[in-house]
Length: 151
Image 1 (cartoon, helix red, strand yellow):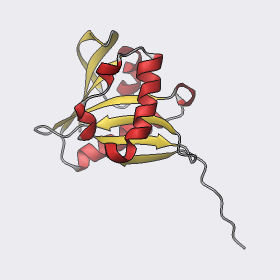
Image 2 (cartoon, rainbow, N blue to C red; image 1 turned 90 degrees about the vertical axis):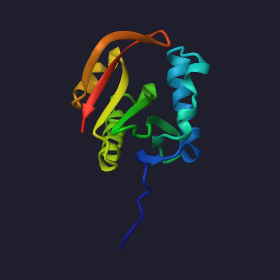
Image 3 (cartoon, rainbow, N blue to C red; image 1 turned 120 degrees about the vertical axis):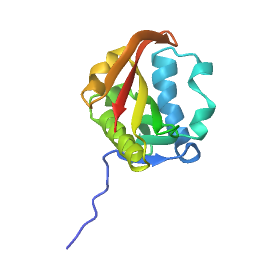
Image 4 (cartoon, helix red, strand yellow; image 1 turned 180 degrees about the horizontal axis):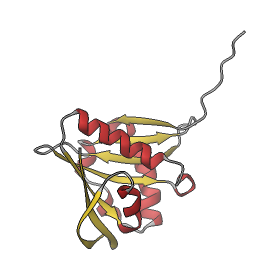
């Protein structure tokens, strides 16, 4: 006898803005705009339309985490807009998205990834091999540093 067990753990999805934008918008709105006070005008840009998006979604369809990978320019691509809802931080979803997007970049031939990391997250990225470069700077009033990963 067999029985079906419903899948209840969150799932990682990769896709375009048309398919994943609603969930990505919900997570980024909650984290960047509401929690961190980033102005709405700075959060949304035309790059969402051309990026590959990662979205972690519960079985119910509720989005928990998101990130995006921009198109490559001369073998270098930019990862950004990484956000995880507060209740889900520390559960490994950010690491899962980071690794998945890194593998996509590697598979398409990118040689280098860069990102703009909020300073409180530097150790997280460093634990995945990212190297901080240059000085601390403000973006939307939040301290950041550029980080680089050679693929």
